[in-house]
Length: 167
Ligand code: ZN
Image (cartoon, rainbow, N blue to C red; front, side):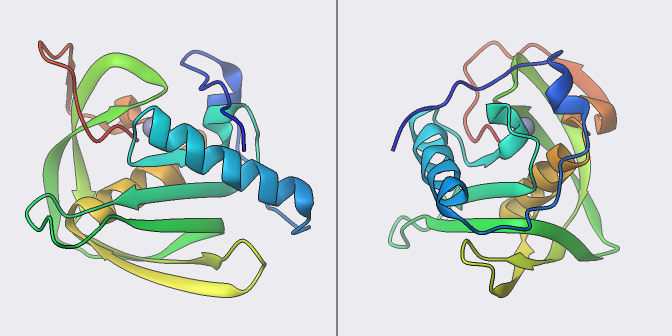
């Protein structure tokens, strides 16, 4: 595994629509392993392939519920993810992005989503996410569409303290 450089805005790769993955080969496995390591070292709770300069539909998410330290963070690897259901109920939350250092914003997101895609070997998978996990999935799938949180934020500001849970 190797660390990849996280590209930052305004790198145009962040604005491109990522290509669907068709071949689940060794190169994809290396990309996924590198993305997991890069996310953990950053540290972040999610990473999309365009953030490491690869315009392909791959995301990794690793998030543990802060309120329950007994439950270890769960790692999700998803290829060609699509959000097939957005809960109509939404909430505002403060988000930051590894590709937009030094800024956070308040973003309205669905409280729950269903995400369908494939695992790293091409088998179909579905994730039903709620709360912060749902927010992270929405943030990462946006990256594959070339959308950044600042596009959706109702307000954006420079935080005084370093921000956790970057995605
Ligand atoms: Zn991001």
